[in-house]
Image (cartoon, rainbow over all chains, first blue to last red):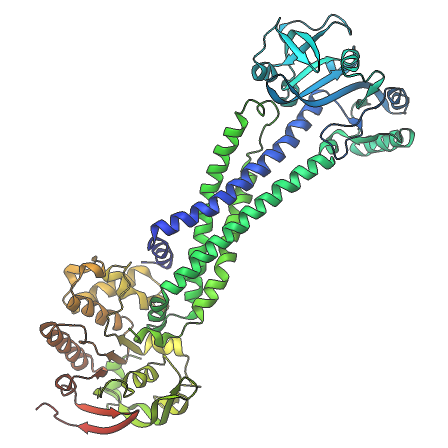
Length: 371
Length: 239
C-alpha cells in the first residue's frame, strides 16, 4: 500500500458525495471549456476568413456593437489613395436574422471587388450584375436556411432569389449570405453608405509595414479605424465583452466548484476527526495529514477537470449543431485549452483543500482515546 | 529503539519518570492529574487501575505524548518529553498504541491497517507489506489479511490493532482498556497475546483497565484515584 492508495481510499469512503462534488467541479470546468472554446473559436474562424480573402487591413467603425456603424462610401477613395495600399473592396456587413435563422452574416460586397474572387461555385451561378435581385449563399448558410438554387429568400423586406451556392474556404464565408453592395444599400436605405473596407497592401509586407499603412490610413480617415486583419476582431469591444463574459461566467462556475470541494473536504475532516487523530497517535506527522487532505482535494480537481473537459466538449458539439450557430462557430477545442482547464481544476482542488487541510492538522491526537 | 536490544544491555533502565505531573482541563475547572510521581523501568508490565475519571487514561495520553501536562516533568529515557523529544517521531518509533475501540480504519484491509504506521518509517511498499503480513501471522490472522475490519470479529479486530501497534518495533506498548469491548473468551485471548509479546520481545507494557482481575496479571499494579497514585504494588499480584 502506498500513500496515493490512501488518498484514493479517502475519496472512495463516500462515493456518492465524491461523485456529486466531482460533478460540481466538472460543470465549472465544462463552462470554461465551452465558453472560452467558443469565444476563441469565433476569433479563429473570423481570422481564417480574413486570410482566405487575402485581407491585410480592415477599416471599420467596429465599436461596442456587434456590427460596424455605417460611414460614407467616399472614405474608400481616400483609403485607396494612401501609399502602400494596392487594392480595396467596400462592404456593408450585418449580423441579422434571415427568415428562420436567428443570426446570419449578410455580407454585401462591392460589385467587381476582390472579396468576390475567392468564392467557388458549388451550384448555380454568381449574380449577373450589381442590380440583379439575387444572392449567393455560403454552403453552411444554405444548409441552415434549407435553401437551394432558385429558392426565394427574404432579406429585410425584399424578396430576392438564391442564384448560387458557394464555397468560401472559411467558416465565416460559408456561413454568410452574399449579395452586391448596391443591392444591399438600396434594400436597407443606406445609399452611399458602407461599414467595412477590406484593404490589401503590397504582397510580402511585414507586420511593421502593415502597421505603418494603418497609421497612414488613420491619419486621412478620422471617421473609421484601420487595423491589421489579425487585430480586427480581437480589438472589437463587442468581442472583448463576449470574452470577458465568458471568463467571468467561467470564473463564477469555478468559484462554485471551489466552494463545493471545500465543503466536501471540510465535511470529510469533521467526519474523519477521530481517524485523523488515530493516524496522529500512531505516529503520522501533521504534514502527512495535510498532504493526505490536499491530495484528496487535488485528485477531486483532477478527476473533475477531466470529466469537465468531456462534458464541455460534448456541450460545445451540441451548441455547434444548433441551426442558428452552425455557420458562425468553429469552437477552439485545442489540447492547450484542455490542459489549461484541467490545470485550473487541479488548482481549484488544491485551493479548496488548504483550509480543511489546515483544520485537520490542528486536531489533537488525544481525541483518539476518546470513544 | 528496539526493546529487546536495549533491554539486554540495561535491563533496569528507567524508561519513564514523572515528577509532580498535573493536567487540567476547562481552564482549571477539571483536574485530571493532581501531581503524579512515577518511575517505570524498561521491560516492565504495569497495569494502571482505578474508577472512571481517576486520570488513568490521561496519564496514558501523557506517556504516549498525545497531550502535554499542565505542569510537572515527564521524562523518557532521561529526556524531557516536552522539550527534548519530537512527539511525532516518538509516537512513530517508540510507542505502540492499543485502543479499547480498536480504531482500525474501515476503508483499509487488515494488512493495510497494519502498514499505516510504517508510512512514516519504512520507505519500501514491499517491505511494509511483508512485515505487516508477518505481524498478522504472529497474532494468528494470516488467513484474514485482506479482510476489511467490518468482516472481522471483535477479537480479530483487536488482534489486527495489536499487530498495528507492533509495526515499527516500539519499545513500549500502551493499551487503553484493550479487552473492554470484548467477550470474556476473546478478552482472555487478547490478554494472553499481550503478555506473550511482552515476555518474548521484552517489551514494556502499560495497560489501563478498571478490571482488577486483568490488572493483577501485571507484575506491577498502580492504583489511581482522583488524579493521584494511591497504591503502587509490585511482585506476584495474582490472587
